[in-house]
Length: 492
Image 1 (cartoon, rainbow, N blue to C red):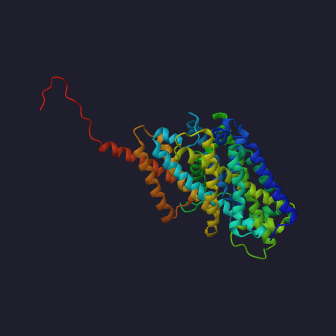
Image 2 (image 1 turned 60 degrees about the vertical axis):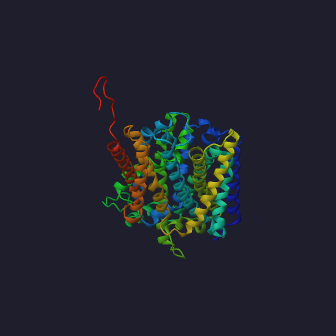
Image 3 (image 1 turned 180 degrees about the vertical axis):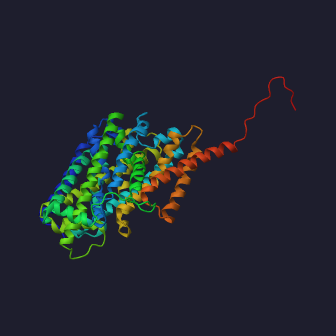
């Protein structure tokens, strides 16, 4: 069903406003420091909101309610792990990023091991971000297609190009301030949607609790002991901690925000409180999903849902009144664009800083122009991935987080080698550990039933252990040092 003129007008006004705000806030960037890290003068509360908005994509907005609709609230176990993981990041990893004026997370690896390790970790980051965030873009385009009738590739391009426009021109300041507005829009939209669901249930909140509780939809804890169950307690807590160590500790998407803070204490404050906000946010989206299940038990859909990701989108388009639909579709766009803009900015920064050598005669203006062009280039890549996402058969949220956890654990293992191992672990050993971790995780991903929340833990352990082993073997194979005979000793 296509949306009406009023809702379309609200949506277009929102998109125009976001683009105008992004262009205005990012106007006049004079050099890469201002464009990439906002002159390192961003207040902690704005960083907090941006951290939350960045990790809240269209996947969260659509797939998390779909998870609760098809299952229960056990996703909250992973959210608790996310909260605990942030505390570890704040005190274990954050200090390393405030020793010197850095632009990317992977410059720490260059300082400890060398350029090859930095470049390899950066390449893994770029591949992961392009795939995972392209799939997030795909999920948003599903709704755009349903509400407008656009061909799917054009729906992907509409969201992608809008975001590329203000991100490539405005840089990090544009991303942060549009994140702030988008956070208010999508949280407000979610609250309105939840209230509408409760109003459509004859017994309101009480009926949701009664129906959902009787059907097991409000279950939070799953004490199953199985390595293949992703939504059990220990997979959620332990796996969630290591996922966060990777996603918020060594991933440029988040590290770029810390580097823009006014100092380490402000970065810690933003990161720690973001965990509380994210936990509450997951609870809201899961309750929306439980409410949708109750609603559709009373009002079965005319056409059965072909995937959980479509349930909330269908409710928005079919059941909400005019005006509210435009708000909710705007909220969906807000969630998608906040993540996509952050991804484009961080990918361009990593490519320009870690992978590309500055040409002879480089100037601040040319470097700034190069980063802007890279931003647009990564936008094109993610649009292509989003178009290809229509052939993904599993839940999009599981695909996105599985991809992210696949490589973040490997990079996390290299950081552990640099921070927790003795100095004799050199670049050769670090690269051996990284290669072993990548090979091991490829086998685990395709040949074992291990649940995705464990990927970051297992990947970091494989990489760390293999790097230590390579360093030990290197010492054993090294020839014994030859000492000259003391003066006066007989020769021959």
